[in-house]
Image (cartoon, rainbow, N blue to C red; front, side):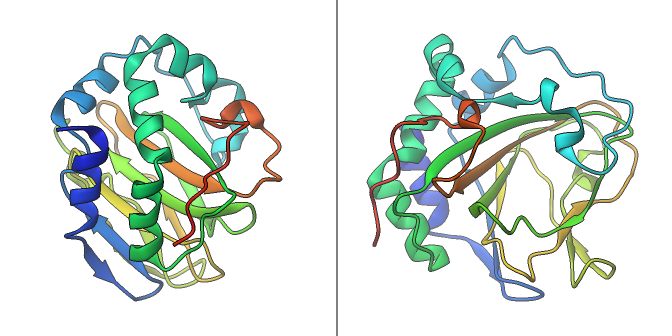
Amino acid sequence: MSVATIFRSSLDHPDSGMEPFPHWFLNHVLPAQTCAAIDALPVKIPVIEDTGGRRETHNSSRLFFGQAQRAGYPVCEELATALQRDDVVRHLETLCDVDLHGSFLRIEYCLDTDGFWLEPHTDIGAKLFTMLIYLSADPGSEAWGTDILDGPDKLVATTPYQRNTGFIFIPSAKSWHGFHRRPIEGVRRSLIVNFVRPEWRSRHELAFPDKAVLSAG
């Protein structure tokens, strides 16, 4: 089945929670062959000694499924095209009660190694939607989930981490999340999918920088 079909199916059966902010967990997010094709992308694992708790500390080594990647690798084109589809966006809007009309798709491929951490933050600002798709199956990876917090200092839970599962939330003043430092033996692979406002400045990060999402309910 297609990427869009499998992804829409995962949205039909989420595990959801409301505290400390609304969030959704997805299973079987992508076709197995899509995950395998992402694994096979010829990307070099960035050598990053310390993020300082922020991904933007090392912007030059970040990997996005932008125009060049879509043109060079079929899996990047297939995934971006599927997530840009009106029917897929409508599913997301309905599930999360969010209006994504006029936003732009951004997909980041993250390869985190030992020493990686993220300080608690909310994603508020230009991001309208955030989804993490976990891709690793290394030993110990079950402990690599995203930390959910009630405010910047109170850890509530760590999301389950399994290959081809997802975690969605809508950025708000309450959507505190991060990744406390812990051992990573291997590579913590994930996709970060955002729909961002038109004013997003780093256009090279966008899958379709000249094509906004059209769906709105």
